[in-house]
Image 1 (tube, rainbow, N blue to C red):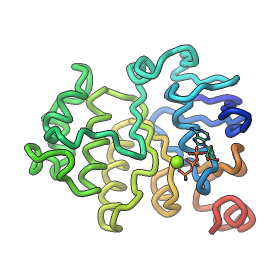
Image 2 (image 1 turned 180 degrees about the horizontal axis):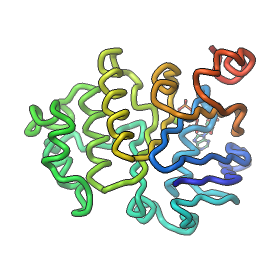
Image 3 (image 1 turned 120 degrees about the vertical axis):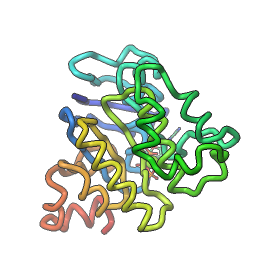
Image 4 (image 1 turned 90 degrees about the horizontal axis):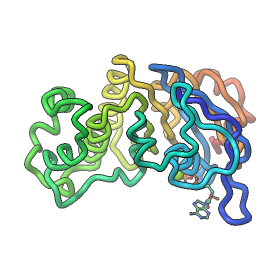
Length: 228
Ligand SMILES: Nc1ncnc2c1ncn2[C@@H]1O[C@H](COP(=O)(O)OP(=O)(O)OP(=O)(O)O)[C@@H](O)[C@H]1O
Ligand SMILES: [Mg+2]
């Protein structure tokens, strides 16, 4: 579904992403792991056209996205949930969802069915939600755009273990409906539970890829590139 080939990103004279290749098969879940500053967020922003790419290809179902601006990349079928979650704190839950609607995505009924906790909070302000509810709302907003691929930047950051479990259940359910998922994480257990394939990014390059459960068998990778 998503194919990234030989991606390069520079910040000034700093070569932050150095020839990254990665694919997300249709309906598959892929995780991108790495230490602070490894280049995970930059990779996601480069896919969305939010930072300049220098060289490389980014394709969704065979269609090149390189020349499209961010809003057209989103419209092509990729929903991006940034680390900041990007919800409007002064709007209600319902308003956050309706401003994101494009007429082609999920109905409000389907969203509220999938996210019962948001139903109870539909008239609350986005800023009054708990961290877990805000993450749920951010994901729900993304689904209103009818994305085929969901990209998430550290969705479990700062959340209590119980809430992390809820997010995991939710994403596993979405994956079962055929939604592709590209996940950036520092939470190894969460990423491994959800993703079919795990990529370890270190200093702008993929250092290892495979089934997350096999990471235990490569202590040099986890030591050098994950700091575990
Ligand atoms: N706007 C920017 N200008 C210059 N350098 C940047 C910019 N954004 C990020 N960097 C640098 O690029 C590198 C990769 O950053 P990035 O945010 O992609 O890492 P990350 O893997 O997402 O880290 P974290 O786990 O802390 O979120 C880091 O060295 C960072 O300092
Ligand atoms: Mg980051």
